[in-house]
Length: 416
Image 1 (cartoon, one colour):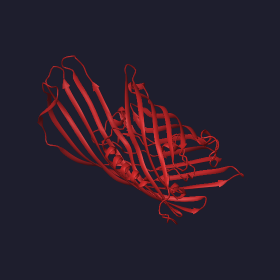
Image 2: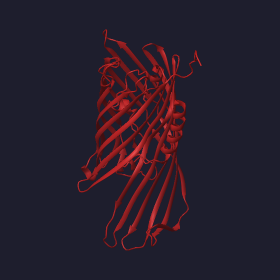
Image 3: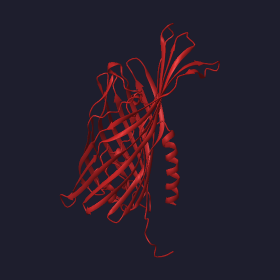
Image 4: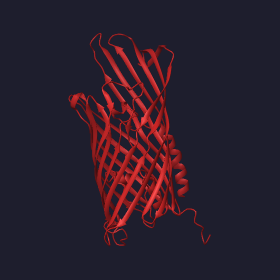
């Protein structure tokens, strides 16, 4: 049964990942878009802390974690989000529903194998500047698309407490952007259309270690390093003269030959390290830091003077609590309660203002009776950006749900 679910979900996410608009952020205009991926829901609900060697949940951030899986694990997540955008003078609300990731982990003795698909970044904006003054210019900017990652990795358990791993990701996607301009009371305008096809490969290595510091307490640690890589962009730009017909549909009246160019974007290296302390299957409190150097994310159509890219940093604090994981009398005591906080310097600087993202996270995991499978819910409330220097502040709330299905594969049955 689980195999049929996996095949169906893989086909579904593969189709939806390319079609969905995963963001409504105007900041997705810059670079490769708004980075949606914040980790698996279980770790995202703890502010992004992922330091424990979990045996039934996948940790996409550190491939060394695959070696700790005890059962074949299939996980999938979706999010419903609402965002209130505001400036000094205006407000707007946007809503969206997205699929977040799909992953499969398979234990093979001391080895663990993981693979899946992650919609990594999204572009989704529609910005208008309209005026009724004769002779003034009306503008409309629109963008859609994003970057997806297909990944595969191996983890190896060197000792019962120490694991190492590595994975490879193939990045692919398409970003479409258009700039439409009309002068008031002039029936003909101009439109610039840009299409960027993105592709590239990057590698990630990691290790995890845990040890007893008292009879009950354990110390957990995690380190991962993403190697610097290149993302190739094949661009096509088209400029056309356009007008509206009687049904207010946009019609191209004259078009120039498309201009094709190639551009390489730099994906800088990133190091992530974390520490945690806790009692296995009872509680955990940990912190995690991710640091990344400056990158080159500007493409031909969004290389504007008011925006630059600086260093990225993410700071996370969080943990979980399970009252009694093997209670037979109370289901509530078997629930995993999670919480955390994260602060993120995205590296994007607009009008000399650093665009930062901060959020409080909550979540809980509901175990399935009679199995190790579980369902997880998460809530994320945060703020991104600022209203200073004429910019936009985003106040958002995301509600996420995921499931982690666990089963034994490759085990010979004694009875048919």
